[in-house]
Structures are given as C-alpha cells and as structure tokens.
Length: 82
Image (cartoon, rainbow, N blue to C red; front, side, top):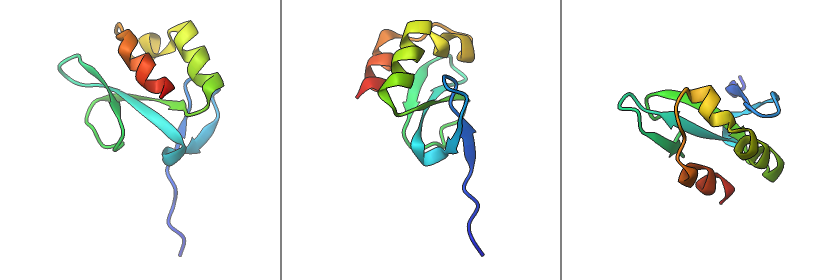
C-alpha cells in the first residue's frame, strides 16, 4: 500500500503540491514569525512554492502579511530567497 502524500496549497499560485516541495512560514502563539523547515512547528502556517517567481510575488504583494494577519519582518522574506 502506498503512503499518502499530504498536499498543501501555495498562497501565491494556488496550486497544490506535496509538503516537501513548499516552504512553511509559521506565526507562533506568541506572535513571532519563523521559517519552519521541519513542517511540525505549532502555529498558523502558510505555504509558498520554492520557485523564485512565487517568492517574488509573495514579497511584492506582502501576501504573508495578509495570510498570517500580522506584520512580517523583512528578514523572513530574505530567508525565503535563500
């Protein structure tokens, strides 16, 4: 029996991908925002494709701010580029 791959939606392009193809950004309960490389950190999460086009659109439209309902520090967007 095949293992089911969890799918998540990129907040920019709205396409569904496996969790391993996306980057997760989390707003923790204390209000801090971090890049979640494990995919298991508690908090409200948003997923972005690892492609440069989606990251650029996310930065330009401040989509993480809208999705996570908070101001996202510029360093989070910088970490996404890497």
